[in-house]
Image (cartoon, rainbow, N blue to C red; front, side):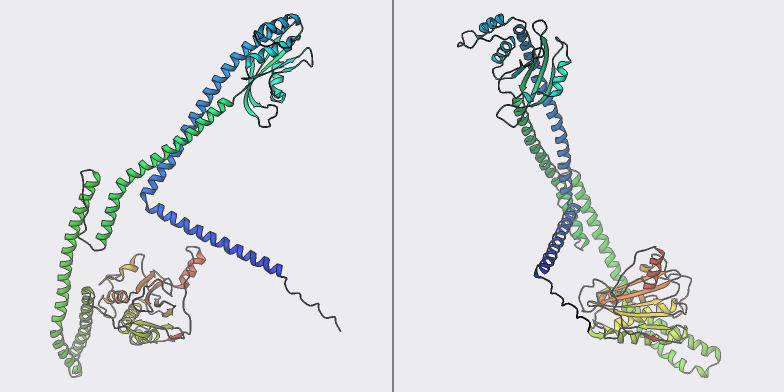
Length: 592
């Protein structure tokens, strides 16, 4: 028997714990990123909407830059002046000390002792030095009074180096030492800014080193180094720096406050004008601005009020004219119904008896019958459009299966499609597609779209697609005829508009069908949109909310046909559009 495979071990708790921690960490990072993006979005919106914020922020940034530049310039100037003054004083004092030291270094040991004793004055007795270097160092130390320290190095007698105070010899840089040894006795001293180290302390302090090379007794050369600490100057500069920062911050805040106050005086009237314009655009024609003063903003308010008054007057006149026109159309339409009924009865009688007439009279009866039907249809459309204009159009809402509505509209268009040798293809979902709508008005919209597609489809196939999602239903009518030119997708819904005025209507339309269809769609809270391209045909899409009164946020069907969008994508002329389309069974209605 082949050996059985070893048993699989269950994952350890530590491994699962690591995976859980990594997953939790990723979730935390994603959450932080989302919050950061939301905060950044709120800041961007506030930045775009607030003129005052932009002005104050710009003033603040410019003020910070200006104050920083001025502060740096002032700080450099003060630092240079203070350090230069201290350097000049140190040079003068070091040169005086060098003259004193030369007097000691050129004396014999006994004379140096006498000079040192004379320099002590009434001070308590001290050991009498016998070495000139030691005498010079002590003399300089007494004069320094802890304001500086001195190191004297004897070049001819190695080992006779003296240090005053608690200065650490490592405070003397090597480059300074080498530079001084290149000097000729009597040359001007050298100076160098360097950190100074003291015994029993580890933190250096800024200081100034001045080095001189002098001659003593014949055959003796000495180096004298003075070490001046710059702690007082550093404290003064720190205080000046702190003062500049405080004054600069206060100045920046003061400028920001001034900018905010000045901007507020300009922004508030502009903001009031914007709010008044929004209310005026919302239909409150009595909205006016309060005018105070005679400045530019006051003249702006006066001009705004004059414009609002003129606009309200013109709108009132146009409303009256539109009301007169609507009333005229409605009255004429109603008044024409009675004679039209009488003429229609007579025309029906003549049409039924046309076989008894001679051929010319029979043809005249047929033409009169057709034109009366067209006239009656136009009259009905005028009455319907007048109801929409007057706001008297209402909906008879009921739950309907949109598949049945589409089938009834296609059935009404069957005869016209047969006469134009047009094939109708249906793409309907297999499941019920319920919506709350006025079936009569929706069916009329679809009939108008189908009649329009048949008239302009040039005998090519027409595709009717029904789609739905959770919130909306949509019907798209696609033809492959002449199409629409750019910009005509909005004009096509205007009353009595024609893409080609020289082209006669082949199915006897009134020119109001698409205008009424758009009004019916808007009455449902939906959309009626058109797309077209020369040589590609056109597509009309009706989108309605599933629940009456709900806000329509999107459509389950794309406005641009998928095959056209795919060709564009292949050519690299436009990005891919995506949409959610409810798919199901497909049916084909052949009118041939």
